[in-house]
Image (cartoon, rainbow, N blue to C red; front, side):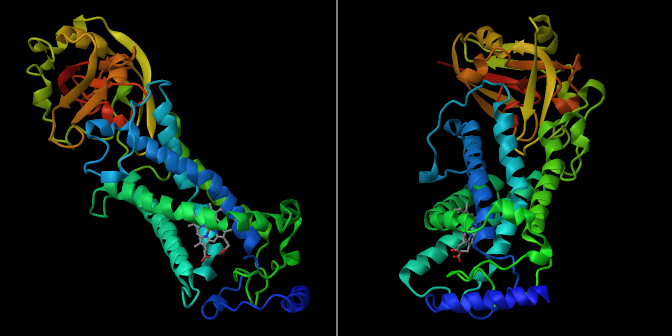
Length: 439
Ligand code: HEM
């Protein structure tokens, strides 16, 4: 009753205003969307959250590309032509830099999913406007919307599948996610340019404090708008705007909770529901996350036994060392994280021989880069090039032990690289050779 009275009031006020503003009828099926909550204010609130959060996701995503070292041809398995970004040597301090940037990229990307879905719900009548465009300007605008919506949905779906190690899409994730990002960024920039003034007007049209104090029975539709977000024939409210914001906020909090374990590791790794399947760990002191097992990448245990040798190249003659030779050298100890591109990370206490010392042994006093090669099937993950500042970092080492025990086979026995602040893939396991390039 109360709502019907309010609704007829709303219609009367609309009629009064329509003496000045012609009614906007976006036709079938836009008329099907009858929620009384939909309108420029609610859309603008979701837009503001995305306006703050998504640039961080975009920026940290692009930084991850640079952290991989595209200057060594290892960021993407294909040449991206003019979409190549300017590169620089990724800083190796603070040690948690990549852990933070990639944790933010994946964590915030997941946490914002409920907001993206709520934003799409709030503008859904606009997606069904028919005919979709009446002028060249509208064609361009619709194209930008298609890039924006298609782009973000593609990035979310491929990103979520990738962190689940679910490669059902059948194409290479890295170039696809990279190209998809640029489609999204272009649509996003056009969208912000067109909608920013409207977002500011929308935010000013209602007081947040008042909305938070309004319960369901007192909830009224917003003033009719020229874009047709407000339903022409609103249904009675089934929840208040406060409830809708709480629902989306609850979705954000729940996603944050299940995601945080992946990012910070340790005990919290038992929390997440969204952990990739088969979260393997090792025995005793090696009890931390394994990304690729020895068996998974074709490392034969026999090749890691007595016959294993490390070859250092770059000087006048190659230097060949056994594991005992490495153990006899000065051992450095440091706590460093492994931060995976999938967003998870783990901090452990490593010990081994400093990379800088191995470079000196090889006869290269100031290496410009080092190509690390390892056992296992040839592919993307058993070779990595390290830049000068990564080799020279005082904690960068060829680790032989972790947490006071020998590395387990799955954690890279007999020796693995551990470097500071770089993507996890640079911490090559089962190392057999390091080629230092003189600076
Ligand atoms: C993933 C991010 C986003 C997606 C998928 C998205 C999607 C959309 C779509 C499909 C529409 C309807 C457009 C139309 O047909 O006219 C829309 C409207 C709107 N968007 Fe976004 N948007 C996003 C982010 C943002 C951001 C960051 C802002 C801040 C400037 C914003 C502000 C608005 C406003 C104010 C409207 C409503 C008014 C209108 O329809 O003209 N959006 N959005």
